[in-house]
Image (cartoon, rainbow, N blue to C red; front, side, top):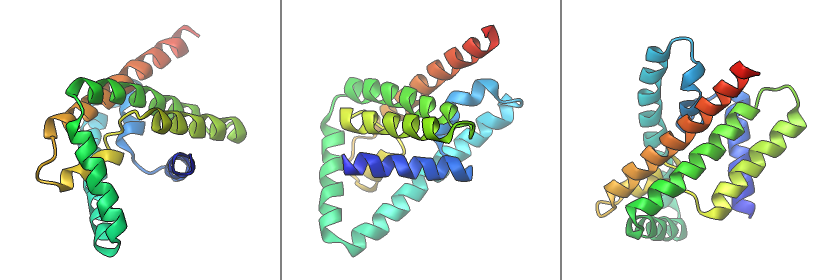
Length: 173
């Protein structure tokens, strides 16, 4: 529970500072004024997000053997799950991350903070799959790359579906 709360606080920092997070941006591509430019930004963004996670995790693995063991176990668990499980879990995560990011508008900070923390805690405690948070599995040569791609696809589908419905609701008012 503490880890889920801390992840939520991390997302709040990202949102507050306007940093780029793929899972927070993909769902709102529908409302981008320049969809072509935003799509390019998404590809660069996901690559930078993945590389950033891999770098930080690898550096910390070198400094902390217990952490390295936990990351190894997590990567093995993710690799052993079915592709369908990874995809469906990632869809639900994508929906929740989009709810969290579109809810954050700096209009009612208490409500926005609660919604963001709740969305993150639900996805973590439910075991849903986050393609950026799970990018550390790519550090292992024996990881199941198909499962990782299923997580990217699932996060993208969930985020786009919710983002599309959010945009339609705003237009129909």
